[in-house]
Image (tube, rainbow, N blue to C red):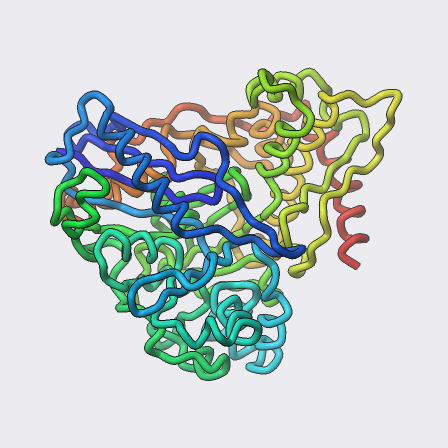
Length: 495
């Protein structure tokens, strides 16, 4: 018996198959092999074609089914993880009306700020736990204001994972966690926010049928089963945004537990049973995958758009074709902490919430042509990403989340010794690394939703601890000194 999980990112779709009996991943694949295109028709915009996501879902499924030990008839449930905060709009025939406005798109910042003022900051924070900000609801309002002919054709609005579920089942559904990340959810009434819908002038009919994050959400229809090579009737039993899903992948469900990622963007996700929010919405509170009316499970989320994307940019533009990330990590480790005074602020991927939704761009400070090398540049980038985490974690502490242990998958920036050791030392936290990723977590959660696993203990029995990284006193002092200088540069830019 097997489970399949998909993780729809902005760079690729990854999929994994978990063997139920062993709890281990027996196959994995990703598509495309080069990063998916993000279109930017104007400064601050970021769009993707949902059809390209579906094409990658098909390609990665076929690749999995060609791996040894995998048979379609043994796959008993499907789980979906997806990039958060995106907007997909479709007509009554399920045709996509425009490219998806994805998570790092900044066009709706002013729209959300205006709504925050008009509705009242206290009222928004009390019910939505956030400013409408640059989230999905505000992106929809932007479409309404700037593309009225397209807006008039809308039948349903969806998040990226809802779109994938629609393609699989032929049905329009969404989840409470997904609606909360779009800032459509009223946490007091435990329903779609009438206040927000009325303020933006949205029809309640736009919202798909609400299903639970973990549980039966629909079944694979015959047409899609044929496209994917899977069995008709296979249930879809889990769906969540990538950051709640990353927490789930690391068995982070309960108050006080912390998860982190450092892929294209960087995230720290802390679970609380208390209603907590940042009055300035620099960190955001969403419903976790196990949140219910009776039991608060809220994720306080720090998101930094410009993290691993900086590392990817350096690889594309500063490295030869045969120099990969491992070589970059080696170069970074060859330079002492502090990068000999070179500093990088990595905010070049749209507006950053922790800077008050300002799009500051990336800054390289203190570059000396006579002293600094490519290795210094890479180390400064890794340390700059660490500094941005530290800056955001200070804001999280104001919202009541003070991590002492962080769990993360052994992937992306956490593969860099400089990054993980610097983060542990500067933030004074222990980092635990595990053999998991978003697609594996989605597969395990599908087993929970299908009732194949009866408890989270059963579902995560195959989660293997790989490494613990402790703070290193030897690099804490120089990093702290560099961070204070870095922070001063950043705050001057914010002003």
